[in-house]
Amino acid sequence: MRWRNDKVGFDDRPVMAGGILLISFLVPIIFFGWRIGRPPYYPWDAYWTSLVITTLTWLTCRWIACWARTRYPAFSHVRRRILVQYGMVLVLALLINAVAGYWLDEVCLRLMKLRSVPMHGDDTGIASISATILCTLLVMTMYESIYFLSELKKSVEEKEMLKRESLQAQVNALKIQVNPHFLFNTLNTLAAVIPENPRQAVDFVQQLAKVYRHILEVKDEPSILLKEELEVLEAYAFLLKTRHGDNLAVTIRVDESTMRQRIVPLSLQILMENAIKHNIVSAARPLRIEIVAAPDSLVMTNNLQRKQQSIESTGIGLDNIRNRYRLLGARAVEVEELPEQFIVRIPLL
Image (cartoon, rainbow, N blue to C red; front, top):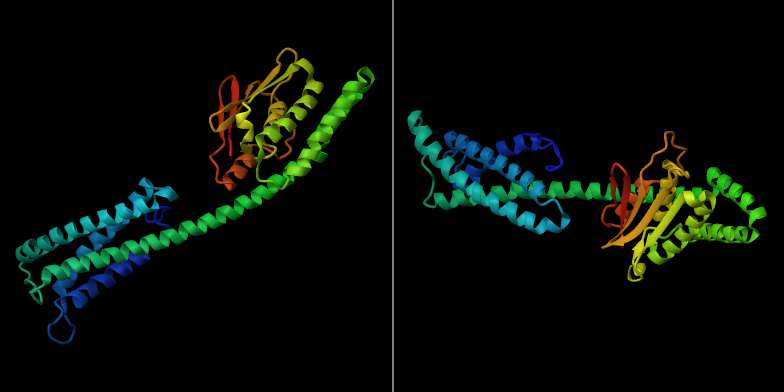
């Protein structure tokens, strides 16, 4: 048995050892009226019986608590988990009390020639059941309270971590404004376009300004309309296709009704940047990027043709996108790598 695990929340061995000894000692005094030093005298045989039953009941409570937390891990299942585990614990505890009590009293005590312990009072059965129910509820409530506090602490720590990562993601998103590699390629492309096609050069500068203006506008936004993200993505794709020509093909197929949903800002631009960065883009091996709408998600696919040597990363990647979606409490970003395709599914908010 794993004594320290996430389903318990703490190392409960000291509490278990002390609790079992203490409860086993107090139950005969509280529920059966036996006393130390005066009549009716506390029979020590009763302590061993109480110790065995308490140990079996405690271990059963612990096992059921771990099982229930594995079976119903979601926060939405807390009520069901509590009802199931308390119901199971009470039934099994009463069964243990009845079977173990009978076995210890009728079998062990007689076969081992130990004196039988006369029970005090006429309501022995009620006292025994009451002790079992109360002690079981006490143990389960202790485990549930400590587990709840442990999960609450982890939740707060995780939320703070995600906030820090979200802020870092925003900072990293701003780094693209001064990314020397991106600026170098962009300016080289502009310098080549100006003498050949001045009109295209003007369009190129306008689209470049649109991309940077968008980065400044959304740097503090947790989410934006998909329509706004796609408009800027088309401007970004224009810059890339101007540079790569027919070696790069970008296809966007999204219904008008889907445009009203929301998405984490710059996520599509980051994914497109990564696709360009990590794949070969050439006349012999053109790169094809496709963006399509699926139920409750947006799917970006590119043919996989990895470069032998990857270029320096800007620090903006899938991890930052995943963390920002986690911070919003949305479904997880799904990534699938096939032999010839790389697929990313982004939830729509």
